[in-house]
Length: 112
Length: 118
Image (cartoon, rainbow over all chains, first blue to last red; front, side):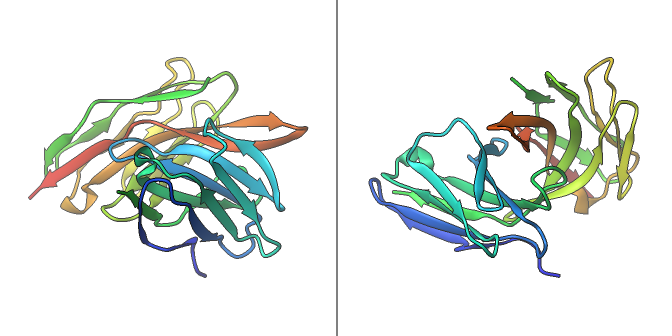
């Protein structure tokens, strides 16, 4: 079975632009979580979605938003990009939103 | 809030050496504990887990024991290989409640870079 897949792999944007990242969970998993990993640090929780509803949100500004589709895939949107948004964005899926969570390889976002 | 503290890195070892990476945590509830590994250019892979006090998680020669009395979950391996070179993250998951529903959020340590030389 395929694991968690994320697209694109790499992305380069400039300050002020908007970006959309995509994630497909493991088949049968109904929950998707998003994490931001800044270089040299551990991942930080952004959102968790389950059955298309937001269940939890980390300490991130409203510029960050997400949604989950009926097929359980998810998109993360970031508006008005800042240099500090440069990071690896990781998507994780799980059956009901608890553990264990299985991670994709991430999208590397660079802001110029 | 919840937090995880890992030993300062990087850690450099020779092949077949003994590995210990220290991890301590702070949590208000009864968290599950995890070790994840990240190879260059990849996402996180679950290495092992423990869900309650005194549980021992093990996988691929790595072990960690959930110690509630010392709030620790140290990672050990008796004989490391070059292929073990990676970044290791300790993490906890606590059950959180929002709007009448619960969810599990992972809180990670800062990571420890392990380099194993032949």
